[in-house]
Amino acid sequence: MSIFGSIVSAIFPHASAATTAPTAAAAAPTAAAAAPSAAASSPKPMSQADVVAMIEKAVDGQDEDLNWRQSIVDLMKALKLDSSLAARKQLAQELGYTGALDGSAAMNIWLHKQVMAKLAEGGGTVPASLKVA
Image (cartoon, rainbow, N blue to C red):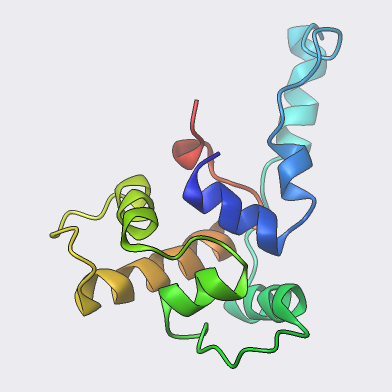
């Protein structure tokens, strides 16, 4: 699973079920039957306030006082995910960061903004462009 996929799954527990491969029997519907279900299952964007509320729910009861609203490292720690430089480099590559993968403030600020934007955009699902094959 991608780092971004892990973030989505930590915040939206249903997301891991939505990203699993369908069974062989479920994968064989006719084209006419598949079209309505594809439209019905497309992600609905959410507001930043909704994303923040979902993260608050996911990190509720933490003993540590983390600044996850501004820090990608603290956001990942709050979600009990690896926040190492290696993990952040991988996340940066997944999200298309073009700067130096050095853990700089610029990289971390960009990552946090992108993660929050992608979470809102995807409405609790990992966008197809970010799914690892």
